[in-house]
Length: 488
Image (cartoon, rainbow, N blue to C red; front, side):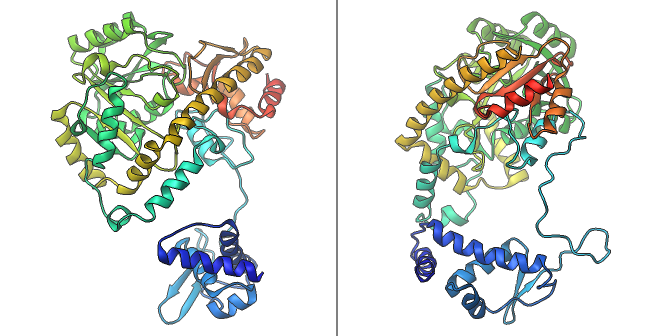
């Protein structure tokens, strides 16, 4: 124990000198102290309002250093479990239940999992995936397993930024976002044939926030927006929040159905068309140049703006056509983020738009979220510039290709067939056997700790009830297919 205590002391010393190396054993000591306090509160040994043991006395009880107890108390205070009173010490907070009965709310609740009776709507998959505990398998979610992400480069970047100047760690950033990051994104866009200066780029908190900002900027309640059928389900939810009228057009393996797209433009006079470029979500299909050029001609004829969400760009083996590359950012706004290949926890997205829109978007950014955060952009840029990230992408694409092949073969044995064979990415858009309803299957699978993505949440016109989107990266556990076999 003495050696462990020295590790705890060393960690605090490292923090004071700015060299944060979080040794696992030191981190465990702090967590042990925190857990001991939480257990005393749960057992009512420490009741609301009670004073905690002094730092010195509890360090002796736990056989750790005083600095370890200080950090544990600070973290408990940040969690709202205890509070500090200057000159008096630390006290248990008075967390009471919402019924005013005077009964204590347990500080540690059993994981009850997703809501089995929730209606299957555009938010269903997101809610179930985000709220599910570790015991749930998530072949329906839209992100990679944590073990597939570049943890080592992220930790390396964090260590580097821990030594950065105070402005990066504490101050607001420019509302446009980090200049160096925008320069990097301009160079990156050029590799996809998109010609844009850094001044045409504004950073956002995520890809979803980028679309939200553009909808705020371009739409009025009641305006019409076209989406694909099927399309990413959160497009439906976000547009509903903006009180937009949403019209969907069937999506083919090469892009939107051109005849129905033109008919929708004539009939509904939409303001926007929101779609994926590169790898389409959920189908995995790729836009053809012929369809792209025809869509752009129609957009010009009908005064339509296109928002292309390029969030899966780094998962492509080779770049596919982009509307923004053909259009020159005249009628197209290009957005993206790095949540699929780098980190969903470090939120950093971007908008690339025509120059005359940038001032208005900056004003909107200040009104809704003030400045852009320095830290997330600095962290993402540090990782992106590291050669390890390029190696990570190469390995990730190879790993995904293998996972797609295995998942497709396993699904085929169950009579579940892909709609197209994607050229990359993580998604398989599959048709279920005759008579099987995707929403019903997803609800029954949820009861067995499997989160699926039924086709109905992707289709505004209810044309995909017999479809399901599978995330191959999240479908590697054989239990997924064992459960499906029992339910089909």
